Length: 114
Length: 119
Image (cartoon, rainbow over all chains, first blue to last red; front, top):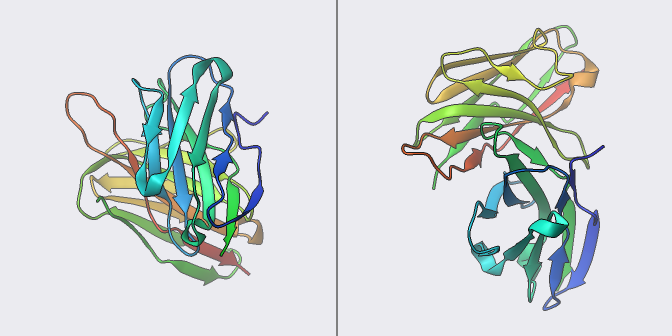
């Protein structure tokens, strides 16, 4: 069974629409959570991360994510997307005891139409 | 920000040959590097964890004799695909974890990936 689930495989939006990408994980215990973005032809870049503290984390380019421990979720949001946000988005989880190893969801392809 | 490079960016080889992929952290020391494999339209699958000066730790199902990993220095890890076969064709990505003192909220920085095609 997949341990990190991204529910949406492909999301298509118009510019200025709001975005929410789901991510759920199935590990118990301490986790660190990440969202990475992969623009076409480029390598993975960190969007934001959560280790502890405020469950609402803000990242680059206007993205934010909320950690809801009771739901094992870490959904990514952006109030108004732009054409340049077209990319693949990956949720990743590091289990606290695994020395940095990241486990990725299968990714969500976001296409934003101008 | 931290930069990780991979070389080559793409390689085509004949079945049965071995291919070496290099992963370098350019402006920081990486105590740990990770190797991933990504199939089209699928997620990154962690293959192994490479610690400088010690043997790599492989994920379940990954053949350590097939995918040889060497982490000889704090800035270089290599992945050698031995006796490559067409089913080994994939996108191989490395990441490096920055060395941090006092515990820490370290982040992995990813390389651009290497596209391997085995004919």
